[in-house]
Length: 433
Image 1 (spheres, helix red, strand yellow):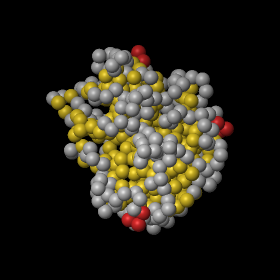
Image 2 (cartoon, helix red, strand yellow):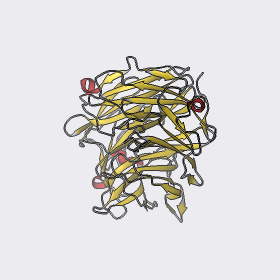
Image 3 (cartoon, one colour):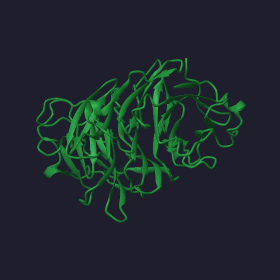
Image 4 (cartoon, one colour):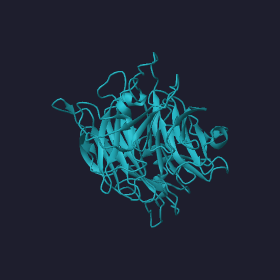
């Protein structure tokens, strides 16, 4: 681990439209502050394949979850209030503890909006998934049926009709055209499963899910982004009842094991058929930020939708502003500084200064009324780019000293930005104590 207090002689860059060049270190050392953490041991040869915030709130210091692949590891990077960082003993070897071996290229790692918990969803051997949840330590829950997860999200589902227990917020897992509920307590004898159909009764290829407060006040609806059809599939954004978490009737709404979209809701064609690794980032549980990538293609899209708009009696997701269609998108994170909103988008295969796949992160302003600004306020990349560095392959926003800060993963290195500020643009100022 190394903590950087200036850019003089280091490898980080922050630039903005019209800003100084990366070679002008005297200017840059006053503008950027960052801590970098390398892989904690030799067990993982691919550290930083996924990032997620550690604590939901952190008035002093902070935590960041980072995954290592090849020999899979779950780590927590702990940051002191002054910016010092340490992985220490916060390493869980997933194969030894949970029989979770090599992770996928983009592991499903999600955070609970209601608690400090995060969850990793990965194959546990055969036709089963391990849903590993917790903070400092992890608890395993098994989902029977699928071998791989396409997406997952924490949702607050309504209680099963055969249980007098209110659900906590728990992960719902999407695989193929179906979703599976993960139960923490009083688990049912049969794994809850529900196949999702579009408004024409065609099965969905589900690629992203999220919980949202649209038609309910005490529980969540399920937001789904996926595609229908083959050859030239149609990308659709739909709402389903949160009770699909519980599976078939009479304990859940999935009659015959299937569910149509919510009544009085109208699916919309997003003009982009998402592939594996796509995301829905919810904002205020009302706005859906779609982060899409395609299988076997560099095509990508970021778009903002308001899920609360009405047309007559129907709720119709409405696109706000224009889409960002820069190719090569891998991951994104939402940053709300309290005075402005931004979307950080990672493009790890982008060439920088002629160096192949060095990678960069573009930070776009976001307004919930007008949508995304197509011109980035700031661009981040390594000041001394290396081939196949893959900077930007995973992103997270995590609390640090009570303020949200940006974390970026590259090949075997994780960067946490304590300050993002130039003469031309300011995301946030110094956050360290």
